[in-house]
Length: 307
Ligand code: SF4
Image 1 (cartoon, rainbow, N blue to C red):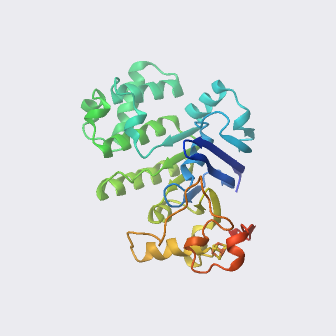
Image 2: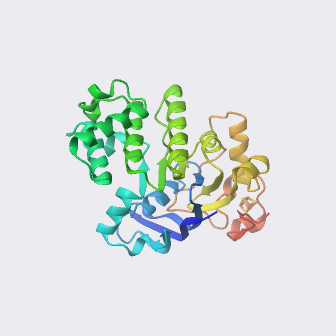
Image 3: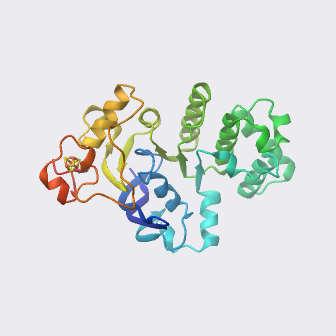
């Protein structure tokens, strides 16, 4: 596997009214060319922060340590102009709430055409036709009519598909999809899943999926990193983790997934401003030992646990 995105010891701290949020602590993971990797965990565990760090969309000074090497370049050393080129041509992101990604005063079609023109430097009429083709590919009904409509005239599922069309226009080397199906109904969800699958296969695009939904991870990814309280607690191939999860948190997530439980695990995830001493999972862990209250475990064989 050729590694082209290497996140190395990423530490992110965000000052808030209630204290400093340690949103990412020593997060390391690699994504290979064309690989589909998932970061999974409950909401508030810091997984979206990793995506925003890759896109360099965090406030200045939030990254306190670490580096992200993309195609041999440390993204944190690039100027804002160079970073805009990376965002426009090499890395695309699909958000949970795509409505906010479209400018409400321009039609969806015009915004898609603009993305096509920036990427392919073609005439406006060619870009329009290309945008309509993309809208057809993502199954936006009546694309010629929809081209001239504004984002607020689209349903949630349609605007999500338009966002994927926008990403397809860029043919990125890496697609980051942050909870891409959470706001969708079941039918639209399965459609968006198959769109992402087709897209990454067609362009050999690597995928970084950010989700709390293990089912989605199993459908789309080969590798997974499980995140808890700002740290990766277990990582490996999805097949292995499905068969034999090692970390008690992963085990609890897997158990909840297999039993279709609406509440994943007893207890609450800790606030990132007030992490417990020792292992942050110890207040919820059925296997905790005395050492777990006092000493935070290191990673051993891909698992961060004293057991
Ligand atoms: Fe549970 Fe201890 Fe492992 Fe933490 S280190 S997950 S508390 S057994």
